[in-house]
Length: 190
Image (cartoon, rainbow, N blue to C red):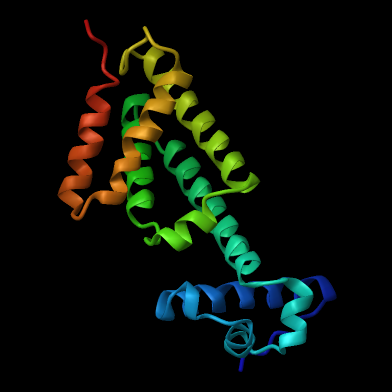
């Protein structure tokens, strides 16, 4: 059983919350969403059920907290990729590859997907992703790496939707081809 008490009350609360979120992710991956109970989560996290209910009213709330953490980490990873050295076109392509891998790595299953991909945190993440891509696309358009006859916001939306197909890719080679085709649509028609 993990020791969750830390130096301050705030740190303790964060540790308890993270332990519950991590435990839920492990249990859902192992047993499926429908099989996980709050009692199992509490036991796996090393906390009492009453404590768990102080933090989360139900399993859905714990899963949404996990998803928010995952989405935030993915956005941070993409921002890091976008800040790497290279031409705007190279950084854009690297970012698109990163995003496609994230889409491909999403948990599958209609029940989990429907639960996790709704709500304000998903809308905010979509906006941040679109802004990140639009910024890269604007830089790439100025450098001549991508077309400038379509707004960066429209091209960003195109990229996000085109790369949504990555969820269906079964190999890294197929994923690379999808990104290559998406990038081809960004090139100037001249």
